[in-house]
Length: 277
Image (cartoon, rainbow, N blue to C red; front, top):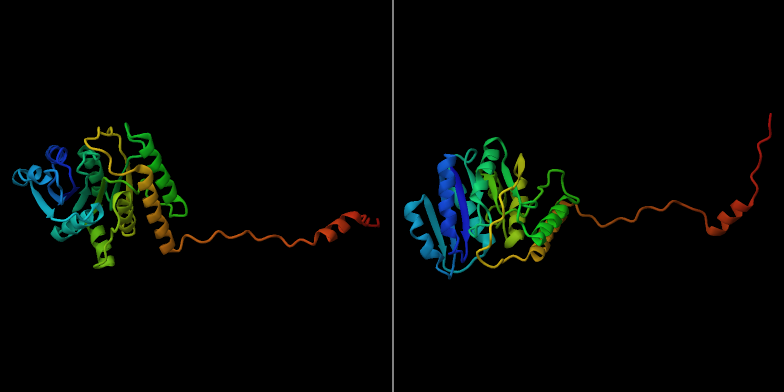
């Protein structure tokens, strides 16, 4: 079973089209799937758009009366998927954005990576065609920060919104955290928290470069790339501190040298010749 998770907030113009596109992809891909959608207290008619899809698709809709934010909505969907599976080693979850910034056409390749043995498969958007230069630069900055001082297998694009995860990996992550929230931020910082937490329990992590063009935006951007990159960097820094990988910069030791006066005197003295034998 593939659980397709869609957190939505004020996405009436795009969420219906996204769900129908997911249906088309899985019709051709021939995999069993379920849609789990959170309507996070939308005020633009998103609930009216979603209502008919609950009858036409294998869809479970969770509605919030008060907004909880992207991070909490995402974690709620992940926990719901884990609670529904009876084969966590085989089943997986895929996270998609409701604004169509993630293309359902990229989902099959991520699923294939999980089916071939990966526990976590991430979509790398840094060189995506049509991606704005500011967002591309912000993603590269975060990726560079993730690799600095981190393990060799640190994910290349840890702020990826499109990702596939084996449910047994998520179950281990939630078991380790207990009742404590895994994701406490929003935006890219939330995605970074999730990737770092799940990555600790993943035996194999695959990164897939996305080649589908970035779609035209149907609404103004909510994330500011540089601000979002800064928030993600703070998450990475906190993680390095928690793991003990970030240490104060040490001053390199200086070689013991004689005082300046003694060095000058030594240079002034003629060198002794070694008598020949």
